[in-house]
Image (cartoon, rainbow, N blue to C red; front, side):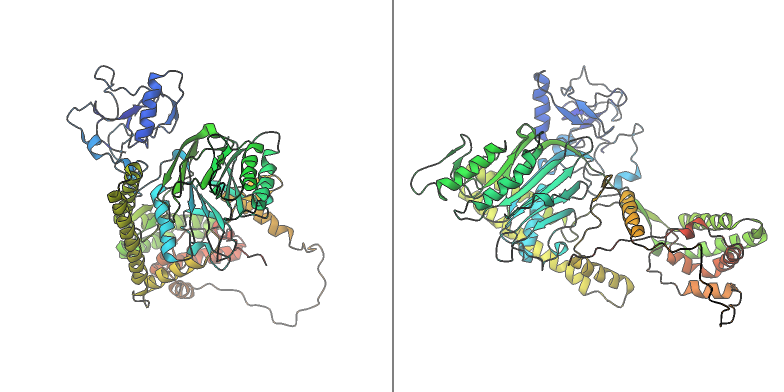
Length: 635
């Protein structure tokens, strides 16, 4: 959020909430110029209802006054007194960067100071925004060049949901080696020579595949859940270029599983339908020389499918030449805010759809990481030596094991925070090799494409083709440099090895974690609920032994085990041999710090270990474990 005062000529909105009443620049509030104009028009028309989200208090506003006048504009706000000289907001406004809330946009702090949390990520997605869907004809995504094209389209449109047709991949291709890690991908492959559809849903959203709607056609369905709202069913369909009506008949069977219910569900069906000779304005078949292209029966089947299932076709812009091939059907046409085309990745334009459904993203909190290379380990060792002496002199055996362990762990964390710098890192996921130069080129390409579509100038189309070549070349070069930086590093160094194998493993995995689980009591969506479901499942398959009666085996033929003695020297040796690259356990104590301070903490741990053994008690941290579910492919 920025600290600039809101001037009279700035485009800004004020929150109507009594506890907030802050003015926010539209750029900082994630309000596009188009939305701002709609709000202005709604002010002039009292019957028109419009809502917007305040990025300061994160509440919904039902219309507000947008006219900034010297008489009505309040000056007791967090942006200080109005300044006529500060006109930079208008000068800095970038219409192609309207969804980018940077850390130096508007501030909600009344003190006017910036918090350190504003700088955890160079680019952060807003917490609320309208749902965006993108339909794209891929015409194969097997090659690296086409995969780069897909990543460029995603960067260009930033869709919440992406529907793709003609992927041309099969089970030999891992999802992770093709698609970016920002989306959960649901695939229905045909073969590597043709066909194939997929739906990608941002991992911030809760989605699950509707396998019961699978029929013998190239279509895939996903159900997206929203808190307090009806679910949204998204389908992606591809029809081959022939006269066979069976794929449409099978699609109709799938759609009727939803529309045949008592209440009409929220549906969006998109894809490449290859029916160019239907006039969707009138719902009729275009006839004439060599028309309809695929026969009257197939085109009528398509029209009947839409009418019988109460689907409205809201996409009326040609996507290939003068033909409308990529369609968008929905049962909620009144919630479709905008439909427009965009540069695609084949001879088809992409179709971008914006819904009035507002999405709240479940952002993960930034986590703290220690910068060990900049840490003062000598300082930690010196102060831990002092703590060791005071600990040994305080008669630790008079305390229980839990108290001694908690005291030790608290002191260790205190010294880490004191002597090791930290930083907050967010969970923002991005393509590591896509730099800002490429992102600017992608935005420029879309501007040139819009200009060429608008006036049809050959010069503009030539400029578009040229910048498209430049982007492909830039992306290829950036990717190759990124790979070279991994392979050319000295792989004898531990950090270089980790970077190398992290990249290799990322290209091999085919599961992005545990999906939503169905249970008898409903859906398990959170990490805790998924862990509980899996834990109950694991318990159910184990045999419960009869512990009440054990068979008598007689005296043991082996000598009795001597008492275990914990020595300071032995503990120090074991701690010094720990691998610092291993992850810490549930106690969150870094292995690197344990190894660096092995000599100082060994006497403390010797007392705790001995006390635990003698009293047969364990600290709570030692009773916990990190358990990871490993995906097992179906046979």
